[in-house]
Length: 453
Image 1: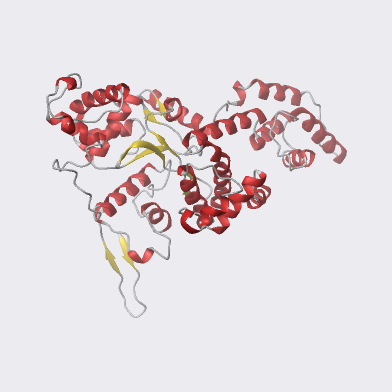
Image 2: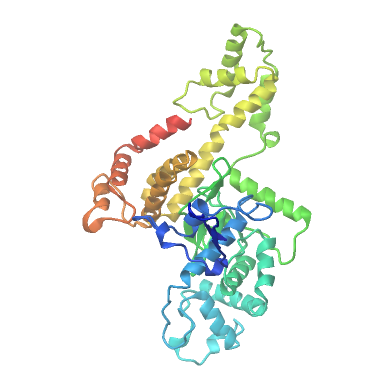
């Protein structure tokens, strides 16, 4: 429902109702160089007047469906080119090839006996690709006649985004049964997804920030069949999972969101050792001197084990937590310290994992460090509620991820002007790229780190 407010001199208002698949985003929302796409429209303009007010709760799956349908509505006005005489779309499109093979009655095992001209055959790059095509074809035969609702049940049971036209939904079901359900983004821990008309890559939908009530965009994308241990999770359910299986899916998802190397305190030997040592301290928090000694004792215990930022005074940081929790037991104070700062080895392992993921996603792995720095700065801006500044970094990241050339001090500024200018790279952004090339960081990032630590 889209509503227009009443004029000052009238006693009524005007409302227009639209199916999501028919709604066009008003042109007036596109201001200057800022395009209001489906994601921006949902985040900035859409209000939840549903009976249960649950469109934007949880992991945002309902929101994703709305965004997907809005995308379909916008794409209806964009005429796609017909390829050759088939009229079925791009012959290199995997779903078009499957559709053609299905109509011709191929089984996925007898393609080599096909006597049609080579120009009309699906072009397969390798034996492994041919093998996957044959497996997909078998599943296409199996599911092609199912209704969209039936196919969406598979996606629902596996916690996947359900939106899209039948061809797209069918692709997601076939891919999921072959390769497993999509997991979490290795950079931001948001949900991974497929984008309609791009069957070759996996994309990140972004991570939902509960504190600010917004989806923080992420430009991560990767080839569909690479790094399955990072991007995929098994099993793929072909019938509704039991409550125990649903709980296990949720546990795996939360574990992925927590990141590499994260364990519950009861399973972490380092945490258990710190708890035992804390309980044996015999601290006295009834006097100022006792509190000061307790802070020093806790600092000595956690040194090298808990990740207290280098730019902060450890004794002061721990002292604050001791003061706030002065009515708690030593073990509970230690739990508060661990919860706030985390373990040093886990953060280092998580950082290494993110670096590896960024390198794998980059056109030039040497640019991964800069992209992660931009991503961190972007997150700070989104946390502050500054969507415009955060989005400018997201756009730059999307461009730089595709860049094949290494960014150096010699060429950084060239990407903001002239024939070598890149989309989303202005003079200020290029200046930060130059700073990073020279120093391994940039002033704005350090400023935000200090403000958020």
